[in-house]
Image 1 (spheres, one colour):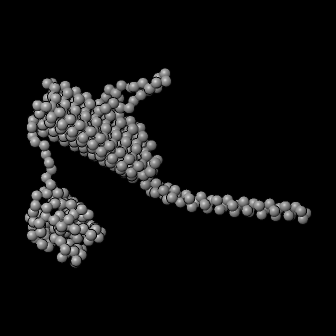
Image 2 (cartoon, rainbow, N blue to C red):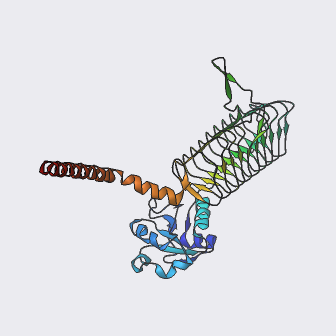
Length: 360
């Protein structure tokens, strides 16, 4: 797609400053943008980055209009908008419309059990597999290589990307997205030691994923030993995240890559875990709590607070502890010096005591 700066301004309902006839061919971040690209500046501090950018046009909030550097006004076109990020995304979508698969119904090269029920306007692509007694809602897309195990139930507007796997009897709500190579409903990691051997505990529960959940590529959600592993409504899970058996995740949680929940751990609503956070088994994360990257959570935490470190502590305490740790080499030297001084003082005291004895 190609347009002029004026046409883009009309599309975004923007006020335009600078050349109207600039040809724009794409939307890119400042550090990738070239002369025929539109980019954006969200805050005044980003004007420093803008000076180094080749972007021919820039989206800017109305609030920064008076702060545009004078020399920049002669170098490029500015488009003043209400919501910079939203309208930059709109520009991206204009220049690069999302690629969509054709509507094909049920491919003759898909394997769909006769007992499966498939809703209206649902499309099942070549080499996908749908098992016995599966129920799929309306407006779904089951892409190539995806496997939907026996007895699964999928709500409306659900998308299963290539090579994702749903084991048997998994339940998905409406508007769920499962990305490639995710595995939902694999057996939980349950064993008991009997007569010197690890004996498998049958995992006879299932997984329930509520409405509006998105699960990233390569992530896994294990089925419960009994009952359900639950992912709450609106939760967003990044790539390579592990949710173990019998976990109950609250609504609208956000987990970044490589987060791991051990078995039977739970979370309240609106919990945020940054990358590589590890949660021990049978631990509860309170509502609205936030966990910094690499935090190790080995005990339940109150809601509404931010935690950091391993073991995870309130962020103010964790920062204090980190400052102390960074000074350990210096403190070690101080302790050595003090130990030497103590030795010298003790030696002097012993000499003095000996002299006094001799004098007596």
